[in-house]
Image 1: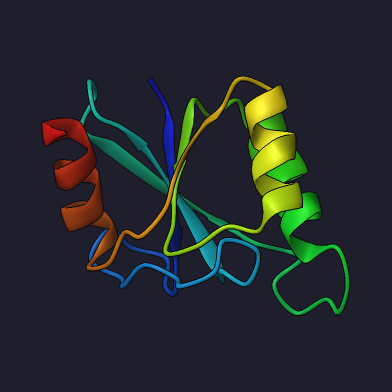
Image 2 (image 1 turned 30 degrees about the vertical axis):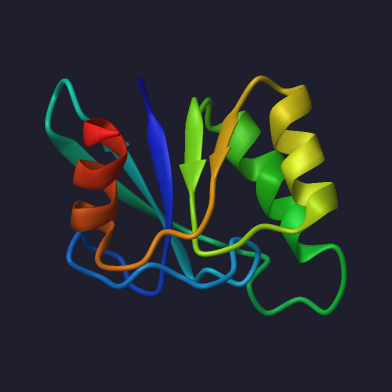
Length: 104
């Protein structure tokens, strides 16, 4: 399972982003391998369609779930149509959010 966490920084101890589309990074976590990898969000500074474009990137990266503070409805639709679970209202560091998601 590959989980993407919307984050403000590039490491697992970075705070989660309140917005999926505006996240500076996506921390890709593989819980089985206990592996983290950061991918910069090239759309974070754009003016329009940032969430949908970021969702497309995450689908291309093959994630199974996305965790963020919030996610717009069109972004969530793109992800869900691709079979990606969308989790919102997550706060804390990427590492903490991942642990919370795996417990729930």
